[in-house]
Length: 191
Image (cartoon, rainbow, N blue to C red; front, top):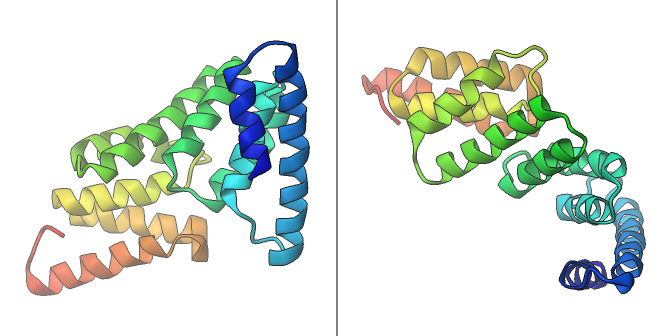
């Protein structure tokens, strides 16, 4: 993708040509989003939004970087790179609380990937207690971590909350409910 090439080249050379490369990357990504939206009728590629956010942030426009980062997160709530990008945008905007929440989600995603269930539960617990919940995927992460830790009642509660908050966008939460139900029938306390 030409936009990605322009973005990488812009990062490598922060001279006068970098601003032009940033603008070229932004324009190419905007075209890609328009084409993608036309082809998929709104079901877009989160990487395009992620790269658009990166290009805006690299060009010094943190305010314009936020909307595509949020869209990328909505489309791919299990991608740790997107949470890192959101955190970077919030830090640039001097929004420390939001940056910390995004960083927690990034760290929780990594913990889940590595099977560090207690760490994932600890990272997401403060987020699921916020109202409104800044990242609904925190409920799913918390549910799966608690299921793995044998906290079946808490896992079921978090999974039910995730299904209510995200509906069909995160069918993984329904998987946690089904796994929990199967574990109860078999007498097992772990996934």
